[in-house]
Length: 106
Image (cartoon, rainbow, N blue to C red; front, side):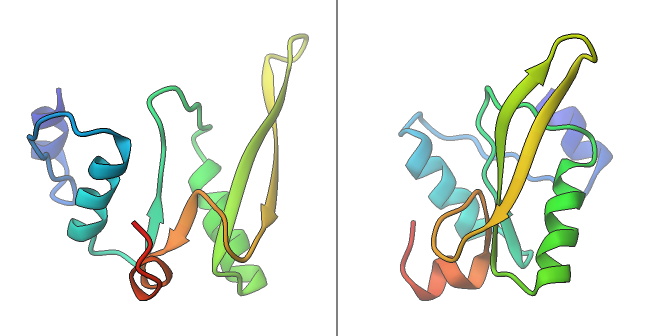
């Protein structure tokens, strides 16, 4: 499946390695990243189709360096998830790559 996605989009790279934990995997991805921003998503995370675009748009609009999108609830009757987005200076799920590298964060 991963190779199928890689063949469809030249931005996707597949890395094969022994399981060394989430931290080592993120460090490998960070070292190979070519964009300005990093987004960490875990296997059990649920994102709506426009979630990343909304985070990015808010980053730019507010000239923020880091954005966090937190899950806060699910409305059963409407079948929708509720999210709130905030900007924090030193913690986050989407981080400007230069902040990570300049501060030795891995």
